[in-house]
Image (cartoon, rainbow, N blue to C red):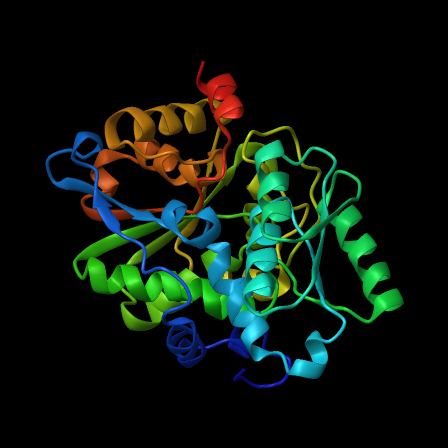
Length: 325
C-alpha cells in the first residue's frame, strides 16, 4: 500500500484499487448496472449497482478475495479467520474454499439463519460470539493467538478497502454521466473504497454514505473528527451495525465523502418492497438502505443520474416474508 507513515487516508490509493481490479479479474462478477425507471422521475434518473448479484450475494467477495491473494502460502498454513455479521464471513469462507484454505468465522448470536447457512455452505466453521462487533473481534483475536491463523478484517484494512473500491471503478465505466453515488455504511470499507475510486477519477461526483438511524457510526465519527464507539440500537439492517467505523475508512470518508444520510427501518422496508415488486430484485435490508435514501432525497438537490449501490441480497424467504408481510 502507498502513502506516508501515519497518514491513514494515504494507506490505500487509486493505484491500489486499480491493481485489485486486475487481480480479481475472472474471480468475481462485474455486476450489472440496472435502470430503475419506475423509481425515477423526470430529470432524476436512478440506476442500481447490483452487488446483490455478486459472488456470495454481496460486495464482500471483492475485499475478501483481494486480501487472501496478498497472503503468502505460509501465512495461510494455519487457515484464516474473521469476525462478521454475515456477508464478510460468507465471502471469506468462499474465498478460502477457492484457494483450498480452512476458515473460521465468528458471528453474533442474532445472525440471520440464511447468512449462517451460507457461511457453512461455503465450508466455513461458525463460532457464535456475543452480539456486538467488539465481542466477535475479541473472540477471533483469541483464536488467532492460540492457533496462528491469519485474521482477515471485515472492513478496516487497506486490501479489503481496495477490493471494495473496484465496485466504484465499474460503476464509473457503466454510468459515465453519474452525478452522485449512494453507498451503504457499516464499518465503512465499501464507502471508503468507492468514494476513493469515484472521486479520485471524477471529483465532481457526489458520494453519499447511508446508514441506519439507529447505528449512525460514520456520522458520529465525522462529527467528532475521529472514530467513536456508539451504542447501537435495534435495526433490521444487520450488516450496518458495527459499534465503530474503521480508522482507515473514516479518514477516507473525511476526505472523499460528500455527506452521510440516515434512514429509518420503515424506509428500508419500503425500499425492499419497491425493489422486489417493481425491479424484481431481492435485496437485504442493508443493501436497500441506499434506495431508502434515494426516496428521501430532496428533488431540487438530486438532479441527474444517481447510482444506488445494492450491497447485498442475502435475506432468506422466511425473513423476507416477515419483514414485508
